[in-house]
Length: 264
Image (cartoon, rainbow, N blue to C red; front, side):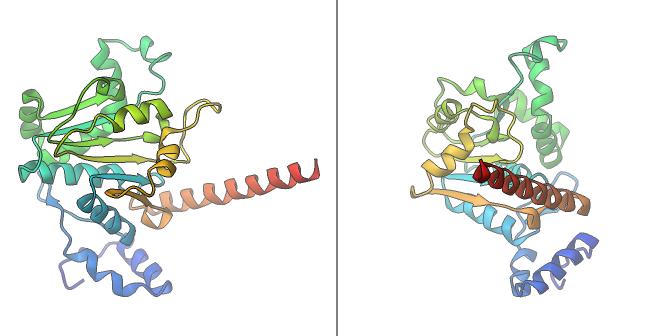
């Protein structure tokens, strides 16, 4: 509080949870850890201990994989760090991508050309960039090609040097797509992969590339795998309660299936 932090209901609830867990001493590490100032003058910084570990992992590693529920700031913080690296001339480009899972069936019914059809999938990425750059600056960099927002399929066959690359919604990549993406990285690039293992939209017979990558790559140096949980949710407090309720429901359902299988 002595660092100029705004006293919000969310922060109060988080302080209480840290106190109950005996971790209140860790709160001070968040206060001064500003990533950047947005176009509207807002200081952007990690708000939970988990987010702080995530930000540190991105800074310290070439590839970071973050898995966690909605509202934990996985994409938003990654975009903020990409903008910071770009402003500091550490990279020449920001590349944001995500898979359009339903592209094969539903995009064909939407009006417009291909870019118009994939834009709805990429809108959250545009929104984050607009907030941090401001509309005029974003448009300038976008037209120059310094910022690229594109579906994952556009990454095939490319080598991405001097870039900060973010793959969002990675739980919806296949193992082939994930391997393709990971091997696009060139020299002086940083990669962040984010996803939510509870929101996989792939057919049940298709294994998520995110889940496989988190196991295959876990012991490789310069690759960090971060797990965020409901304590790191920074949206409306009801989002945290919703995440917890679904986790409880899914655990109970899994236990019920296990017991049923044991009986059979």
